[in-house]
Structure formats: C-alpha cells, structure tokens
Image 1 (cartoon, rainbow, N blue to C red):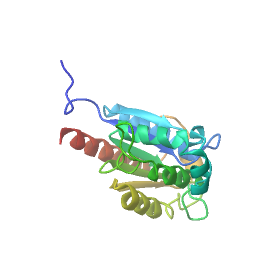
Image 2 (image 1 turned 90 degrees about the vertical axis):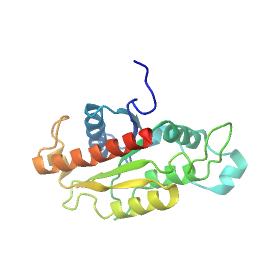
Image 3 (image 1 turned 60 degrees about the horizontal axis):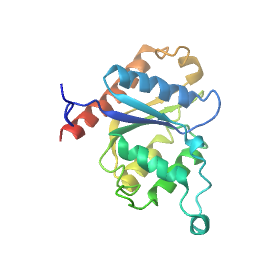
Image 4 (image 1 turned 90 degrees about the horizontal axis):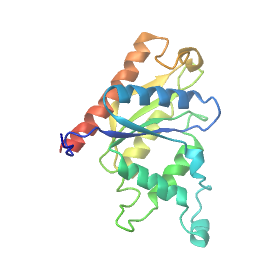
Length: 203
C-alpha cells in the first residue's frame, strides 16, 4: 500500500525545556512521546542543550553567523507535523534554555529551499506540559509559553494542558503517572496534538 500524505503517520517533535540529568520534565516528555507512539505517531525527542546555542545576541550573529543548532531546530520543526513541549517553571517563567532556543529559531531566514524558522512552525499544533516537585506543577509558566508560541510562531496551542504537581511522586514508572486522573489529562493532551496533526496532514 502506497503511503500518501493523508495516510502517513503524523510526526511529532518532543522537546523538554530542561537538560538537567534526571529532569522531571524530560521524563514527562518521554512519557508523552510513548503515548503519542501508541496512537500511531512517530516521535523525535530533541535535547536543546545538544544544539549548543549561545545566548541570543544579534551582535554575535553578525560576527559569527546564525548558529548551526538554530538551523537544525528549524529543520526539525519543518520536518514534523506538531510538537509536544514540557516546560519547567523557573521563578514563574519558562526556562532560559527553552526561550533562547526559540528566540534563535525566530531569526533563521528562509534559505536553500527551506522555510524561515517562524514559517517552519506556522499552523502546527503543540501540546504543553509542565512538571514540578512543588504543589503548582509549573502552571504559572504555561500561559507565557502558550502566548509566546502562538504570537511569535503562529502555532496552534491545543486547549488541553497538564501541569504536573509533586512530579517526583507521580513519575515513578516509565509507563504511567501514579495518579490516574492526571494520567488521563496527559492522554488528552497527547491525543489532541495527534488528532490535529492528522487533520493538518489530511488538509
């Protein structure tokens, strides 16, 4: 059977806003990736630290050119139909690692037949997750991430989201969250992204 754009599996990019060893958000992102795979999606997990992006600085870019890691992020966004993003909360704000990566993405121009960084994300669905050992689960950062991605990258942020409190107690196995009602919310976030990615492919 020939695979057509409408029948192929949706491809999702999975990003954690923390590169810390043992990161709770990376664990949550990995769990979400497995849920997406169970729904028939293909997933690629990205380690933002591996992109080796300097702190955003236009003078640096003028002197050295746009960093290769930013172009790699643009290419990954362009090759995938949607994103799942797990963002920690630092002082009620998204992490510098996450914002810096997307700030660099925003200034990559269209070149060599590839779209600009912003065009590579435009119209694509993204599901937001956050994990924290605290009681709020990172919820204060998620509205900022939602506005940032929708305003600057024209992404379709699905309405479902998960802020996972006491995450060190919830992420006790690689298969599911300890609390069933929170596990069900994770399912809904992932299913919404997969469903919208499929609609995008079919459209």
